[in-house]
Image 1 (cartoon, rainbow, N blue to C red):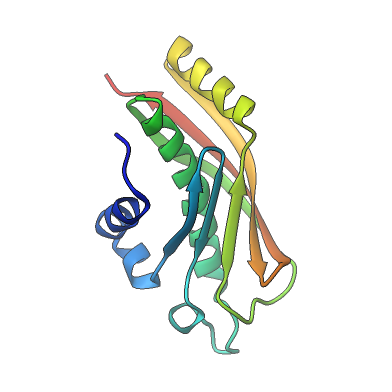
Image 2 (image 1 turned 60 degrees about the vertical axis):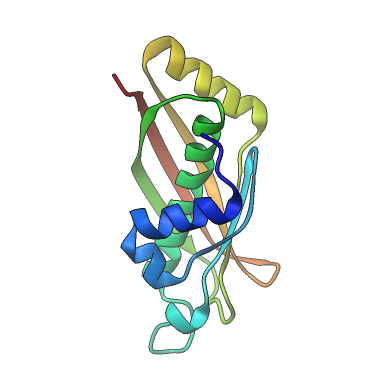
Length: 149
């Protein structure tokens, strides 16, 4: 299934009520690369900077979205879950947080090949959270996929 950017964003908002409440917007969705943004006005803490929980959620979903989009584009029906995540906060984010996840196309191809050959696969990646152009946090995430029967 190939959805447009707007269809994918609307689907995410329906599938994940928290995502709708956060106001998550997909800025870029292309093979091997996803960028999302959330408005600071909906995701701030008592200090007026981005709330750490919102940042972690945004990053986890951005990585998940990249892999989900890749599998759907390849016509692979799989259950994709996040199996682990560690986030390192570097600096406070004072504007609308941008989140960027990029995975080399050959790594995605290997992930798909392992999944189709063995019925399951894992992929680990880093996801950057940005304040303007500066990296303010990095989520190291591990995802697992299993083919649906």
